Image: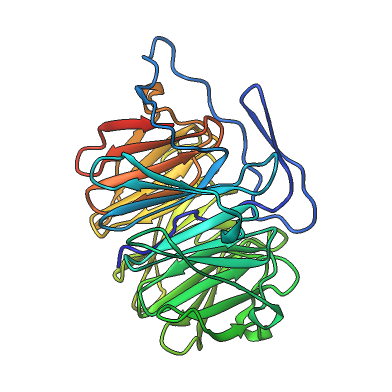
Length: 368
């Protein structure tokens, strides 16, 4: 399913301030991520080809692409009301910018579309907004104590189930029924070892949750998608597995975990959770890797610290290319979503979204 919102893992709900291109995170309570400043543009590199499209991006963070639409959340750090922008997946043209108060957007962050439904997490609103993927119309706003939403961050829908990570307080994962939005369960038993759960990705069979837990190095919790039952908790060290894990993307064969502090990507076997390899391409290329999105053939990883996006071969994990040319408009690239033909990257520092050709890595356009 091309349904994963590849925030990787979202940042904390604390205020984000940007000044002269420097990204600073003022921590207020639990934090999933502090993003370093983007690298300077290479000397002599042409400026980004920007498409003026009235996209309404204001601190764009989450992105999710299905076969027809691309959905981008803007947190709007000044007001926290935020918005969701819908793009045409074939052309990148703006379809609409959704801001109406009835949607109850309140620092909207994570987003995931399964082609029928679009799910948006509201950090400040302790809620999830469901949209109709065909029209962008409001379906419902889901909130209430029973849902266990506590700083709901990342979200992933596989068409049947919707999984939401709650980073603060409850340290839990909420499962919703994708057809109805009804609560299935809130998972928070100690055996799941959720500790600042951030990223989440479901491939329909397995659900993978990254636990940032900076004090111990972090872990990945694997669940069974049909029941929410615990399969295993995968821990490691900086040398051999997950370390300060953030973004995660599963394509049914592989699971890719972006490890922020260690500057590398861990590949797991989706069937067993066994370690396949740890991939590193150098400190200037994997610099605070954050978002990850796999489409079965390619894996795309954002590096906010390096101002770049790395492409890996999904079959081998080999590095295909690291894109960091100024014309791509990368400015603290954050979330990434690939649909097999296109790759979409949010740039909170520049209030833009970059579209890349998935087959070649060539720039298609920078949208703002």
